[in-house]
Image (tube, rainbow, N blue to C red; front, top):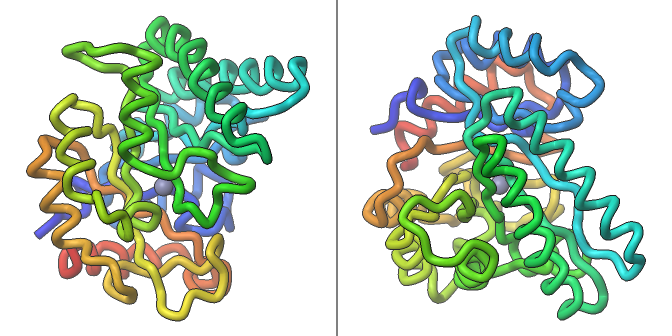
Length: 276
Ligand code: ZN
């Protein structure tokens, strides 16, 4: 049984239908303890004021979503992508976020893309350590490999962590495990255990995989409405040593994003109790 106060609402769940201060208030009044905002809600606003607003509402910031895609065959663009992420890392620190979520991007030349992401992650990690923010690499479902993420496996994410940071007792580079992206992985259990053994599970995102899925980007399901065995997954993540909060992240353009925020939040709170 999970209480909402121990859980995170990723603001994408609410479809960006209101400015962040209103979202903060809705999340707090439904009893959730944590929030993960997106850059589109933060950039161009007074970040310090938003951080105060979160604190005043009694919330804490878990993650900050998400990175500018890294890979490019134009060296100047690659550098610009790294710099954009440096700026976002500073905002993550100003918000008091635990970690910055990296969805890494892709390129037709996957080998180049992967090498660039490892290099960029190393550069950003140095900045993140100075700022006191962790970085969480999020592997995406392989259906996104052409455009959104050349990183698709948890085992691969762990290898990249080791390549960029090396073995360390208190890692600042880790993995965001998102149920939607990894539930199908035949090495699910062993990969979760390996990442946990190195203390690199930084976040656990949940939603559900609907059957049939109408749109792999924006037709994610509410927990309990699809085929993912969330109870087993959450048990495995906890057994691997993760003591953080469950984060709900539902992209649902045709369903949940069309509902009032309070309604969606009430259903999330209830499903977290019954589905995990
Ligand atoms: Zn996610």
